[in-house]
Amino acid sequence: MPLKFDLHVHTCYSGDSSITLEDLIVQIKAKGLNGVAVTDHDTVKGAVKAVKAIEAINGGNKSGRLMVIPGVEVSTKQGHILGINVKTPIKPGLGVGETVERIHDAGGIAIAAHPQAFFKKGVGLNKKIISYGLDAIEVINSLALPFGFSRDKCRNFARECNLPQTAGSDSHIPEAIGLAYTVISGCDESIDGIVESIRRGLTEPLGKGIPMSLRLRHFLRIF
Ligand SMILES: [Zn+2]
Ligand SMILES: [Zn+2]
Image 1 (tube, helix red, strand yellow):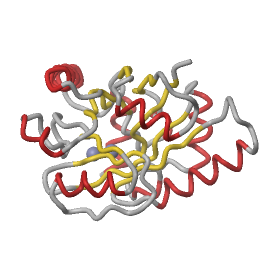
Image 2 (tube, helix red, strand yellow):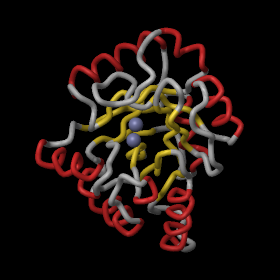
Image 3 (cartoon, helix red, strand yellow):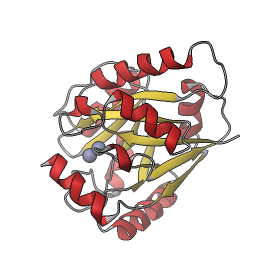
Image 4 (tube, helix red, strand yellow):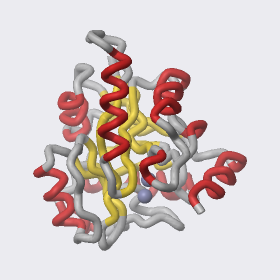
């Protein structure tokens, strides 16, 4: 069965998010997700704690488990890059190429976060970014503005470049978790399997932009 993951969620360890580890667990269940990737800004602290918390809840259950994939959203010189399946800190402020390399060395995959959206620090959608060795493009980001324009641009670019496509809510408040999610197929419920499926492009990005009322609360939280 395909799995549903929100691949871009910030916890309170991000500094600009109100989402606690308890909120994460409640929302994964409430939104019918298999799990989320915790991708805090330039820290893996929250991600590592969330993985431990979820393991404790799952106990010995092998299936039907809630999952947290550890990750990070790295601030590079050119824009934000998601490192998925990363548990070790990745230095911010480097170039995209070097950041991607470090994410790979840490055992993760590198995804261009909101590459084309106003008020967001993305790496842009020029062909140059292909040479950085990115593994996927975040095609749907619920905070991207204008939402439809950004999604279509990113989708066309990913198709043209034959790059896997992902989606994530970029939540900083609990209610926004799961607004966008990636359907991942061809894998079991293991983080390695999920990451491999993303790498192979066995993904479908789905979801919507954040409603105006939540955007306002989001905005007040971030600034
Ligand atoms: Zn970002
Ligand atoms: Zn983010």
